[in-house]
Image (tube, rainbow, N blue to C red; front, top):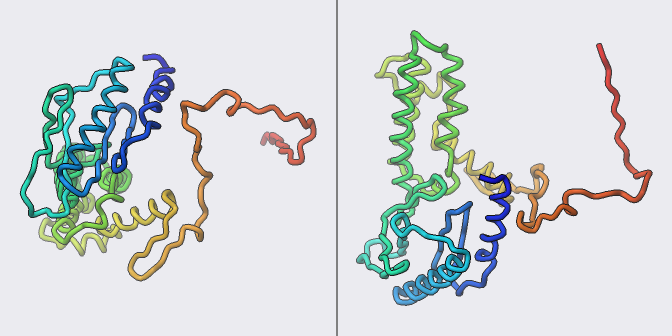
Length: 284
């Protein structure tokens, strides 16, 4: 497509994102994936708000000749009373009944109706086991790539995949999920070390100096909270204040749709600025 396509899409999508929505309704978007968050005290109110938001969204899609696929559009219900009966709010799009899901995948993270992210960890387990088999086909402890490369693959590929979305679920991690993470990690440590399969996981972690995954997840979560979200965080009795750490330059507040050429290029009228940078090339 055209390189200007994303810029034009920002202009169109920004119109619906900046609309006034009913109280309790929030619209979030990433590229062409839209998601509504509806909060209401009762079932009747939730149904009313959801249908009102969908009708308002439908008027925007009709104005710009956009089509929404009802087959891949669904909804999920979060309820504080998790043991209560299930209910159907009857949400429809152009006469098609939207399907209710117990978990949905948004931006690579599976969100379940219990908010314990068990589905996400289960999918990660299957993905990691498939990746482990592929690595095992090209490298084991006694042939293929050497140990240092296998170790580097673990830190740069495996852990980075596992830590994606960790900020969402690491606070609610259970002992069962910790054992699941240890099970995943154990597979790759055995591939790195070539140790016997009866070797305890804790011993392998100590010998290789590899931190258990549930602890690394907590560390990654703290780094994101303090470094990116600029929020204070407490962990194991230690307080981390974001003011105590060096912060990157603030992101661009202006929406890309309003980013004009004048905002990119500026011409100084003063021919002698107060600060000047001199460089010199040295050849050896």
